Image 1 (cartoon, helix red, strand yellow):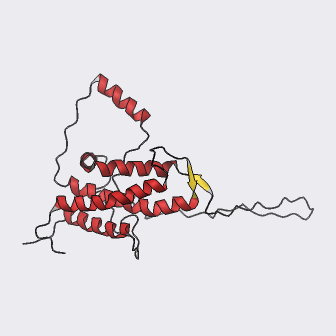
Image 2 (cartoon, one colour):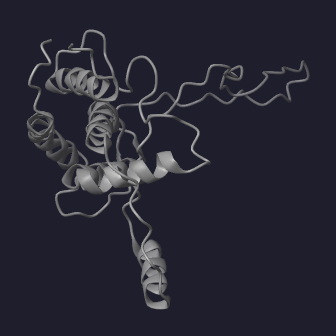
Image 3 (cartoon, one colour):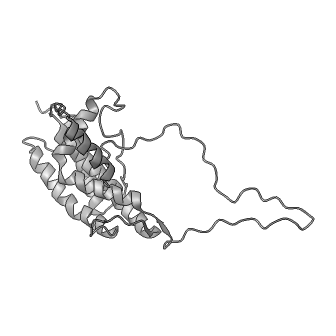
Length: 222
């Protein structure tokens, strides 16, 4: 790709405009048209939402990382008694969590998995043994909790609508001594990447990944 004369702002706007209808479709799939969080959704709906939500979140994280490049650490606001009370009240009443600015990291040393089952089947010859419990087979229409998914969608919409504010959050987070990561993107493939994905979200994720890598590690054009 020729990076000569690359317009960063135009690239960000183009990717954001392409993401807006996809995020709106995800919200519609979750029944968030009215802005209310639903408690349960069918299993197949949750799986379809997650297939779009994970790459969409990765796209927004990369756009935030591009916007954050070159920003100075914002000065902390002076807190008064009234602002502290209002902030505490907002935290208690807010239903939308903060958008996750960092990719989830892979566990390089995972714990051994334990097979889920009904437990040991011990039989006795006196006829007093109870029948073994059989785990129910997951069905596509089974209702499963969807509160967390809906909160992630609302956080995604909030971040996409104000990338500058999220970029300032990222700059402050990276400047903290307790920050574990040097950049928001994890090494390797981004979350939600599909090797043979042909949906529009897959193309957007590859484009956002390329633009973010270019912004974080500018190529030598001399």
